[in-house]
Image 1 (cartoon, rainbow, N blue to C red):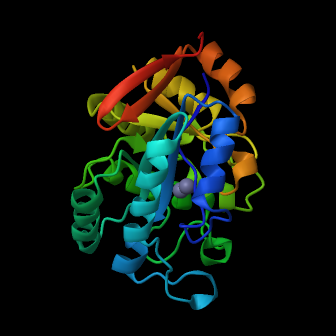
Image 2 (cartoon, rainbow, N blue to C red; image 1 turned 90 degrees about the horizontal axis):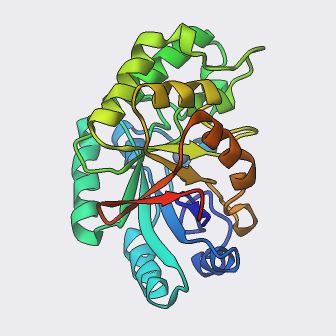
Length: 270
Ligand SMILES: [Zn+2]
Ligand SMILES: [Zn+2]
């Protein structure tokens, strides 16, 4: 009963394969749920953040994406969910485009992710190379906390700890002891709002790390989703076998899938 609720086809600026190839692979893997979550980077637009090489951001073509995905949805041999990954910004200029996207295309689910902090994407190592670790992580977590209160509906909190992927500190770990207060607030808020915390396996290991997942569980968090964050079909469901035993050890008994607003619990034992 594998699931994967976070992936990108070449509709996203950084995807590499057509959506049809992604769906085909998910079917071959016999996933019970497969979700595509193309990037909607209205944070870049609102804040005027250029892409790599200083070029203006290339955005997912929503019209063509939803049309193509809805057609594939009809013939898919599994539950195929058509979603989006929204890049959060505190800039209110992004609110309207996100709300309009939801109203126009009614995505089956939305992942809310912090990628940027107003002037750069954490992906851009050079942009924050001189920022000390504690300051960089604290600012990132502050934005994650703000993102939970986003002015548009969303289901999943994307890759908590994203900034740790793109740093060169001798010890990049995001430790609970160093950010206790804000992490508690983030986890309590996720639980109170009945959101789903994503377990994202696209990093060398997985995000958030074990210690943070244990804290989330201890504070009452039970809803998690599995996310390969695949940008190529070969990566779909990547890391499931490795991470599920760890999730079980922590106490999680399954994943939760947001299926058009309804939370479907899928136990690991089935
Ligand atoms: Zn992301
Ligand atoms: Zn993604």
